[in-house]
Each structure stands twice: as C-alpha cells, then as structure tokens.
Length: 392
Image 1 (cartoon, rainbow, N blue to C red):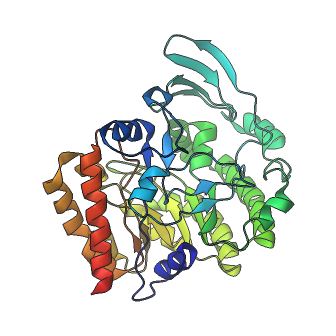
Image 2: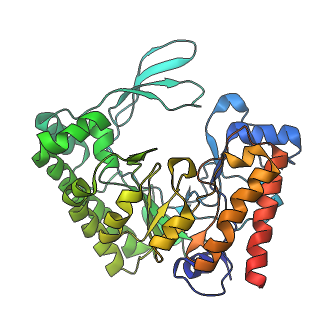
Image 3: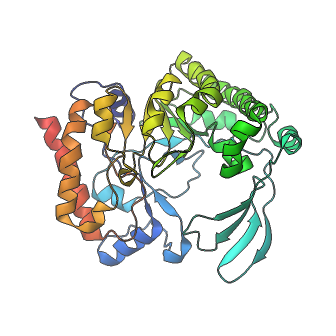
C-alpha cells in the first residue's frame, strides 16, 4: 500500500490499516542543532544556518511541488526514521492577482518596514524567525474594497495557476502520494485584507461589506477549483483559517454561521459533488466551539489541535467520533526528556489509533529547544507504538 492509498484508507476509517508515519516540519534552527548533535547530513541537504530563519517541510505539511521545482522538504530526518511519502500541494494563488510589487519603506540592522505583495504594511525581522508586526491593511471601507476587488480579485484565472498548467497537471498522474490544494479561508483572507481588530468590529459595523467580500471570494475560488478538478483527481483540501487563540475562537458560533457557513457550503458542496470528502481546516488555538459549525458547513477534518491551547485529541475524538484528525502531540513536551515524552505518547496514541481517522505527529513545527537525543527517542517510540498497535 503506497502513501496515497494509506492516506485514503485512514481518512475513511478503514479497519486494520496502519496509520502514516509523518511529521509536520522543523524550524531550520532545530535541524541545524541536530546536525551538530549527530544527525547525518546527506549531500542533498542545503546548509541553511540558523540565521536563515524559516522551516523544513515535513510529510504532513503539503509540499508545493510542480514540474520538478522544489521548495525544500526535509530529507535527512525522513530517511533515518523511515517516514513515508508526504502530501503534495498544487501551488495556486488565492490572494492578490496580480500581486503587488513588494516595497521596502525603511530598514535597520535587524528589521525591514515593507508593503508586501498583498498590500499589507508590516515590520519584519531580517532573519524571518518571528511573526511580523502588522501595521496597516489595504481594505478600510467599501471604497477601498471596490478598488482591491476590481484590481486583484476579478473572476479571472490568469496568474493564479502555475506556468504551463496544462503540462503540470499531467505530472500528477499516476502518483503514490496524497495530492491536494491548500486554499485560504473566509476568515483568513478578510483578516489579511482588513486586519483582525477592524474585521471583528466590521461584523457588526458593516456586515454588507463582509458578505460582499465572502461572495467575491467564493465565486473566484469555485472557478479555480472547477479548473483543478477538471484536470486532476484530488485527495484532499486544506483550508487555512487560524481563527482562534489560546483561550477560544475569535468569533462566536453565531457569527460563524452567519458570515462563513453559507460560503463554506458552496465550496464543500462542490467538493463533495466531485468526490473530494477529505476537507481539513487548519486553525491554531482553542477551536472547541467551532468544531460543530465547521462540520455543519461540510468540513470533515481539523488540525493541529494545539495541546497548550486546551485541545486534547482524545477528548475531541470522544465527542466527534467521525471527525478526521491530524497532529495533536505537544511539541513542548518533546524538549523535556523521556519521561515527558512517554507520558505524552502513552496518553494519546493508543486511544486515537483504536478510534481511527487519525495521523499522529506534533502540533506544530519542532522548535530548536528539542535536542536530537530527545527527538530520536520521541520518533522511535512513536514509530514503535504505531507498529505495535497494528500488529496486535
């Protein structure tokens, strides 16, 4: 059974199928530390160095590959632990098209103040190792949205697909890996256009504008998905939202059902009609109150289930037995040593494997405070638990 077949079987709760051995990814600084502590470096591993910032893709972070052009995916950890072929993402542009030309407004030794390709003004560290400071956004009212809509969100697919798309689409068949698209969401893009604080006020101050934004996005994104499924058989959809913080969601279930559900249903209804029933939403934070609204809207899975935000995958599975789940292991525990690792794995892995519909790995990128020794212990033990369960 190849990785694609295994992914489909797990996500449809087929009994007796071993789950995938995947990881999400690693901060470059973590990989650099591990090379110093004993991780063998292959000839294909680029020397990032800690100052480079950024991250290595793991298997569970869909990789944007097309026509042989790669952004870097981890090779060395993958090979040592016998991890399986990872998910692949068809790289599409769901945002500004044409994108703006990035403009640097000012810079010092450590940071740059710039306007990015989506018209957002932000201050960013040059090493890219922290979240930027967001300062201004392109949409402030109906007038500015009208301009952005006419210039960058027209119902026009040119510039939204990879170059040589017709040829590229044929490279995805046949394949042994899960293939999907990682699209944006009906909260995440308005937030990127307006800024989170003003967006939250606008749900009350100008609901007509927000519905117009969502309707525009739905029309455009459905046209993009129609083009994709006309060429390629998809295994999954990932929708990026990030609409919760540590203590709960940024919007209530009521607001979700009013401002997001109708547009989600247009997308998920189309996908289900075309045989795509593995539809994940990626939202950090405590999203307990949004699980039911997401399911009502046609979403079938969620991740990452951040443990330190109160998300326990065992509790989630008990309440939502058919929800598809990935990740949910506490990345912070891996830095604490063997006892903490054992406690983390013993509390979650066997109950989740027994329940099915689950791929276990860390709830976010592995941070640089995780030693190579601790990571080896964690990953070796996780692999052993997976093998043990499916040999029972």
